[in-house]
Amino acid sequence: MANVVVVGAQWGDEGKGKIVDWLSQRADVIARFQGGHNAGHTLVIDGKVYKLSLLPSGIVRGGKLSVIGNGVVLDPWHLVMEIDKLRGQGVEITTDNLMIAENAPLILPLHGELDRAREDMGSQSGVAKIGTTGRGIGPAYEDKVGRRAIRVADLGDETTLIARIDRLIGHHNALRAGLGIDPVNRDELLAKLREIAPQVLPYAKPVWKVLHEARLAGKRILFEGAQGALLDIDFGTYPFVTSSNVIAGQAATGTGMGPGAIDFVLGIVKAYTTRVGEGPFPAELKDDVGERLGQRGHEFGTVTGRKRRCGWFDAVLVRQTCITSGVTGIALTKLDVLDGFDTLKICVAYDLDGKRLDYLPTAADQQARCTPIYEEIEGWSETTQGARSWADLPAAAIKYVRRVEELIGCPVALLSTSPEREDTILVTDPFVG
Image (cartoon, rainbow, N blue to C red; front, top):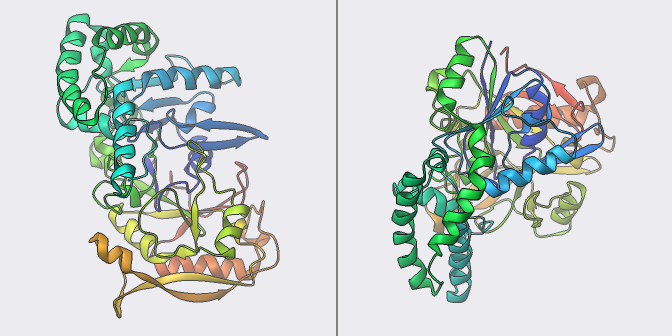
């Protein structure tokens, strides 16, 4: 029995929510290992839409344990709001099917304030914005690394909590003074944390121990990440990245399990390319084709509502992320969005000042100068939407999928042809290999 890590292999928004939900019927435990409530997952089940941004996608399935690992930064107020919203949709959430790592750091109101102030400062100074969601994710990770974060376990001890607050606001008030923000109201923050603590602490557990015991018992664990590998703090298009490691290796450190617990890495990949916010995007289409992809794919962010930039499939980038995440197989999503195009293009290399590159360079100025080198491939007029077997696909669509496999050096394990859970073609079961 294999344990599976699911990672986005582009810039996020690849359709991880549906795939994780689809796989969760084979899993016993679903664990989030990084990010916060800045990335959204949309699940469509029997025509009912669930929008998640913090809770693991498996929470909508009965009989599964959902876990938020220590690699996640947790906004406790958003957590309670999301739980209440899902309960209103009929989803059962209890301390038996949801656990939160005791050592997960908290996102506080001051983090969001700092995040937004920095983005505003960048706009006013003419410096390009990073394009954050303004939800405090980055500042919360900074405090974690700076050893001044308030963690879930701290909510259970008043003396510790007060000491943590005093250390934290001593740092933040100096930053806020430089940004022209009023100092943190210590008593107000303490009161808010006292109020929210009883709603969060019942879920707090030593997640590393729970997962270890689950593994010893032969349980199948599905590790779920947020965003995409091209937003990884180390291997993404820095500085236009998120504030955590997104690649598959983080699944181990973000949950307290060793790397030996990972048996299969499934990379989620759209049949074309999208990106939200700022940063380089060599294959971006700023024409009618790009607009058509966006309209057909409903390319608007689940959390922010921001319009996504669209382009042809970039095999260079996906080949690169398959390497950095050690991807075993990919789940190719939104193939149906390409229905009706007479001709499709795939980016197979970049031109950088007359030199052909088979990877995206690290230097930001070089990334900005890369232009795509395309290969054309025949499109198809038939529909692929709702296909559940290879026999349901047009020959040209199969040819497209096979060429993608060749170019990225990784096989397709799953193929998704609509947002519906069952509209999925299984090639290789990641839990079996």
